[in-house]
Image (tube, one colour):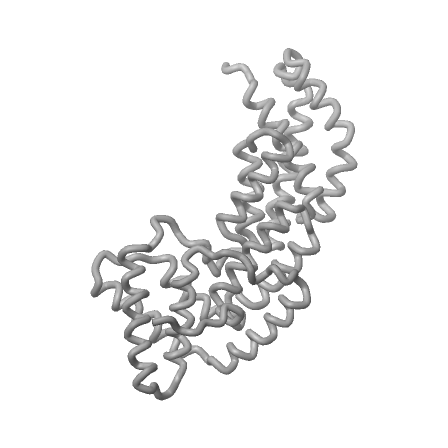
Length: 289
């Protein structure tokens, strides 16, 4: 039996689609689109945000699996018991608000994205809607049993081996992190060094303020290393590295101001990654003593 489902008010799907929009904006280097998507995610889905509790229910189902049917059934019941305590009227109000923002700021293709495990997202949403009701009709009660069975079977048979994209506590998710790295790899035709990846990972996982503090430390360390490597024997022996170093040294004093002013801007991040990459390359080519 098929049940009606409106994906526009499905909290789990809204979050996934916003994450995909965010990922697209990073690849397209569209900072306006990125900032809009990130702003909506922060205001509606971060801890203490209005849709955070509903998102937790989706996360509990999509991020877990069960070894037995009994465990799966218990997981579904616990998740739904949690959802029954959510203020559904308040949630509904904020869904209206987030939809207005999505319709105003993003293209009409926003809801055309294909989402993995779409049917489970739909089933979880439909089951939560039933748990919000004070009384259930016979038809609703039968629907509830069917949906619980479907979700329980998913937890046993179809749960992903790796974590789902949903992770309400992080600024971005692993999918976005991978796409950021792929974007830089494609743009500069090389694999990012360990330290470059650390910087991007920090951007992915940190709040804006925490990332700015982290970048301050990185800049200080980078500045020291640039000076220390000035007379490094690798630069004396490796002409290509020497040329790269000399070129970047001329720009460092100017670029460091740009990076400090707005470390979240992609152009600033790109500059810093270049310097860190060069220092990593020099270190890698050092003679083993």
